[in-house]
Image (cartoon, rainbow over all chains, first blue to last red):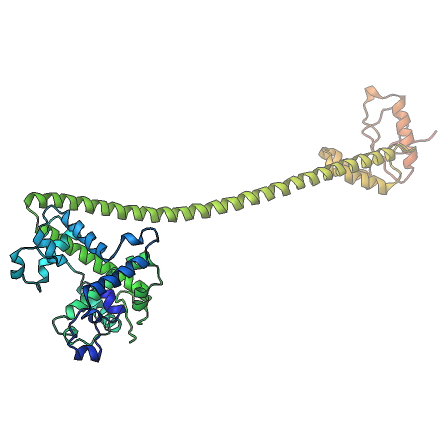
Length: 196
Length: 225
């Protein structure tokens, strides 16, 4: 999902105004400074725009959080700490003030639950371009063409470069399924195909 | 930015095929790493069960590959069967045409047989008419020759008869009768007389033998009274 956002919506490009505003490392600069209600309303409009008339009022931005939290809560080994680490909810205990909010690793057990892993502490595996071996350089050329990026930490040799590689590997890995689900004429496929 | 991406195995593949091939490579590696990750957090019984399941999954994959190979082979065989079937249909059609042709040839052949039989009857009638002339034989030498030629093609005469016929055709031999003294009668005398009379002096008459009281002299000439 993030890979599609970065490729199609220039998610790794920051305008001079955004850079001067200190939004270089903001994931969604357009939403920066907006209220939660503003974001929820935007999301709700998008969801309801694609639903049938009879049922669209039954769904909103909150439905997305409901789905994830319900799915996680069904896992027999799920705890409130694992759940809140991913959802960002408060545990309503004094522990919250001691938890590291920047540690994304705390959300891994809940992620494994969403991926139907029996063991919540299964190591996370991500697709990588290293699998291509001799074709990796060609794939990196494709990566530099599909992502418009001016964030220094994502440049080659820096710490976030691996994320852009993972985005590329993920887009390539899911390409056949995407074409099968959405047809040959969709924005993601077109973005991949139009770069050569 | 326009870039050229190629697959090292097949440089001429279109981009769609390159992406699909890369996708399969990345996915295979991802699934293998996921399998190892799942295995790493299992206890011993879990690992044994997982190992057994993994072995079973490998067997199923191998069976799937075998099935795919068999399906491809079936398709090849199907194509061959279709090809042979088409050839067989062609042969059946050709056989039907040949049968029709042979049937029409049989009809034509029967017509020809009928025509030949009709011509044979006509010819036999004509030949019979010639034989029944007042002279008791054929009218002239040319007709006799034709008759003998016709007969030579279809009868089964002995060598002696053939030789006699050749002599007859050349006008050198006229066989009147076989002489048997015990069977000599006035009718023989009459035949000898009439034949000799017809031949006059142009033919040499040969007899198989003469009775002591025969009117034929030693020179073979009939002595007229």
